[in-house]
Image (cartoon, rainbow, N blue to C red):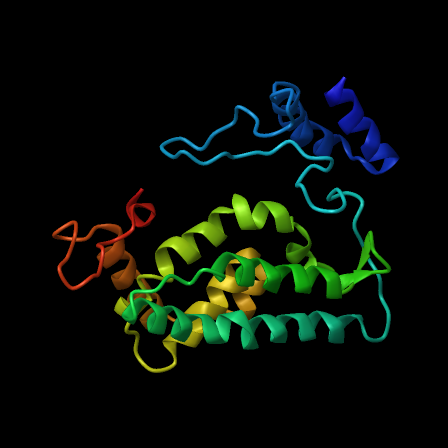
Length: 237
């Protein structure tokens, strides 16, 4: 029944290819627990779920096939404003905040809240009249696939940034200009090919990021004396 409902909700806009793509997902949803929490689909080698059972396919406010772009004279402007908000907000202040708190041996208790608020604000600004219309076409479409509740509790990117990257930020010492470039890529560029082209990482900055990943992902010794409380387990799970 759940499979039939999922496919029926898609309506006549559902293409045959998308129907085939949805079929394995709706079968997983059919096998989900009766409490409506996690399905039995897991990422190999981790303890993190790969799929949640929600009212929509991606747990966003609308299904992927229901969103449609609205082309007003200011649609592109709004999309760019959202990107500017992302780069000038959390992405700009988080690294320094993480360093100062770590040096004081204090946790960044509002990290996930602030991280998720950043994307929640983006979605609210992009959606036209509560949806499913949105501004920005392909450039800003990737930001729509978002669920605030899941972000604060389950999203892997929020968890990795706040529980790994943030407390290890004192050991990220890139060449001048690279920190901004890396943060822009982590927040924006990695979300789509279009955004990756707009917010790329240079080879030099990518090398800096890889050196940092190597330090925190495979620390030798496992608990370096210069890292208070050692490297969080999530950094090398």
